[in-house]
Image 1 (cartoon, rainbow, N blue to C red):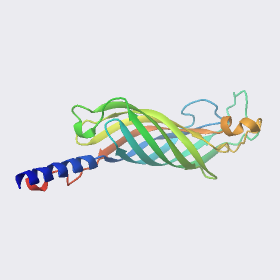
Image 2 (cartoon, rainbow, N blue to C red):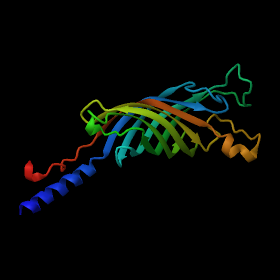
Image 3 (cartoon, rainbow, N blue to C red):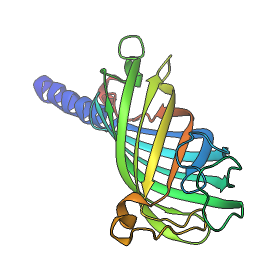
Image 4 (spheres, one colour):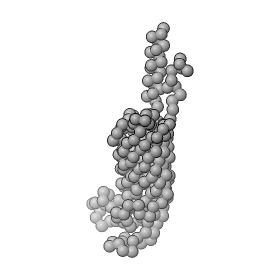
Length: 212
């Protein structure tokens, strides 16, 4: 009977531990645009952005993340630019983005072990869909960040990611100088950078009921 209870408690504990893999959190930062008005300047005309994050941690190195973001993208032609599109009207559009990303930690990380595994840089890559006021389009996010867990299942961090879109009309200007390359090379980008906080959800069944 004791062996049965011990086995029951161990299986209960292991199952509960395996389920404590989910994080929820928020990100606050900025969004900006890259395209015909702005070929390469990072953080060009930044606008506020907010995101809701949900994570599933497979282990200490790999995480799957779903996020929903709301912000703005804006731009205007530069007076000193060598090239300006024919349409030179400034624009400002709301941005709604949903994406599924994979995070790869450089170091073992677990917010429940904040005294040992409490810091790591990471890379992320994913797929997503965005709406920018006039069209819906897919995009590929790629970025990096750092995370730190001081105590109590909380994780704080900062990240920066760029999104390769499959849309050349964010700025209202479609580049048709070379139709053969337009799909790959002429599409606009947008960037997101910010600070975030997440919390590792507790599993109330982690502790064996026999010892409660």
